[in-house]
Image 1: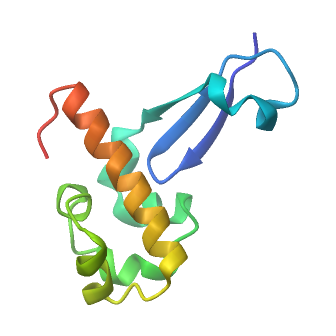
Image 2: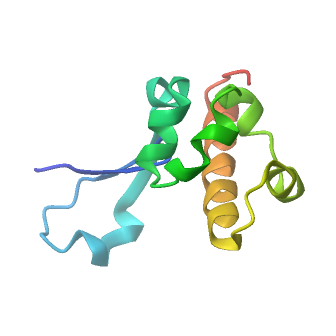
Length: 105
């Protein structure tokens, strides 16, 4: 079986399905958090294609970043709704992963 990996803000989606049509099999995928990537905030945001926000988030740790809500992101200067939604979805996934694996943040 070939595994297909796609990065999404510190989240890797793993597909164990043998089909070449992985987009059609989203329900077969599970998210795995890449904790090493989270340690390098600029690389983490580049992997999300949100590197234009590196200057805002670079001085912060991933632990501080994933605790942010929509208002905090707006206050930091993330004006684009789509970017905020993307970030909030990823932050939620990371918090869930940390809770399931007893990782403090």
